[in-house]
Length: 460
Ligand code: PMP
Image 1 (spheres, rainbow, N blue to C red):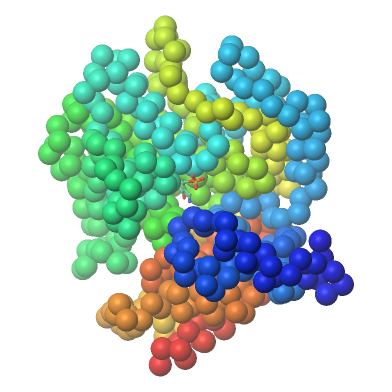
Image 2: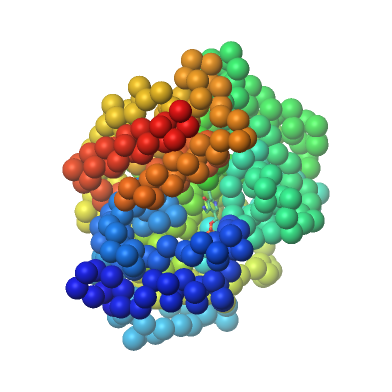
């Protein structure tokens, strides 16, 4: 509840105290946070959030890259309300289905690329990734080649935080905790041209990265590899847009060795890059994709795997159960909200808006605002997602030393100036709601400039 000053009636300190006593936060140093007290978010509308102290904040991250249609959409609340009253829950295990899940599967199939028309439901991106891991391995088992079970992904990839997602991802900080990890996973270099290509041109680097895949396949034996998995554009790794030739070269290698290609669309899906899926924007032809986040604009937890004919037909023709699924696979309320979300996206032409209008506007405005900034080494992004490398020296690309956590310094200035922008090491990333207006993009870019100036002052 908000009082006249837009503050919650419960006292901020009270909520913080309860939170510190009982709530363990994800990806957080809980002890340190408990001492400091978490920021209490109370309300959202459009691209803005409010905290319990009455501060208005421009959410440059759409929550965690998910609130694509913006906060406070009554259409989505109503879809949940109606469905909850009609049928709040039933499972899809026992030879049963229900209208919301069937309709959502059809709605998803209407927007997925090519023949990715068979939909398996989960509740989170991590579960969707675990589903892909099990499904591609089982595919090869059905085909009589159970030894084809090695999965290849990339350094600095993010594929979730279940034991499967952690193992498949390439985040060193995660691999160090909670192991041992899932076996038979290999990783190759990431296509981070600005940071890791040395003197190579983008094209040369794209070829080198695809060669790294071929080398790895030959090292482990082509007949032992199930699939290559990658985010079309790496998100949590810092928004890394691969060289233009990267995906077509990767794809050639996969075809050459008959290796399945899986695209993790958890961030890139649902309009983020200006097409329904990142695979459309980057001309990838995957055999299977994961999606979550933007599927329901984050309004309820729901995720899915869209499976192409090759894999789906193998399962359909194989006369046996696939022993995998979740209590809430295709939850009717989450499904109804996701269907309403996709229909709203279609009605408001939001994907075209990102592709042809607000996406290019945002990319241009941001460059006008900060490309010349002394801290900015490089800006890369497509549609409404962007990564900015902060450097000590623009010419040499020298990074700040370990004693200066430039990303955190910048993020704190953002927080204190009404902007949510995420730091990934020394890279700052943005992924605002897709409904952001031109005026709000202008405001966002002004705030970014201000916060970069303050950050520069802090380290000068
Ligand atoms: N894959 C990608 C590409 C992601 O970005 C994420 C989440 N950021 C996940 C998987 C995991 O999703 P979740 O947090 O919903 O499990």
